[in-house]
Image 1 (spheres, rainbow, N blue to C red):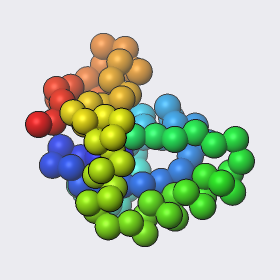
Image 2 (cartoon, one colour):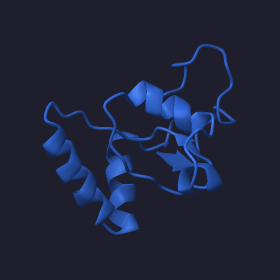
Image 3 (cartoon, one colour):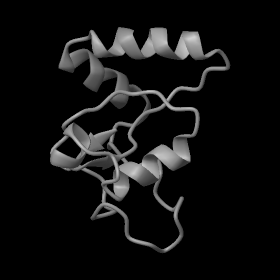
Image 4 (cartoon, rainbow, N blue to C red):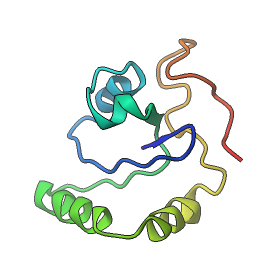
Length: 99
């Protein structure tokens, strides 16, 4: 997840749509609310929760530049991949892509 000014958050969930909804509506207190982390810019799917946790820890250990490169490799415009998930409702601000 990313914020308007590209602050980054890496986490895992067993329900991506619910978790994105929580971020967009600031239902997750702490870092994500403070820095308005409300755009899904990258995701991976795992069938085994342990693999997901391992990958989360791996990415969290990376320098910012490597995380940005991972995002850009599949989403060069940092488009909100969850755009349209919640109907016409405006969640978390602007729907335009970041530069």
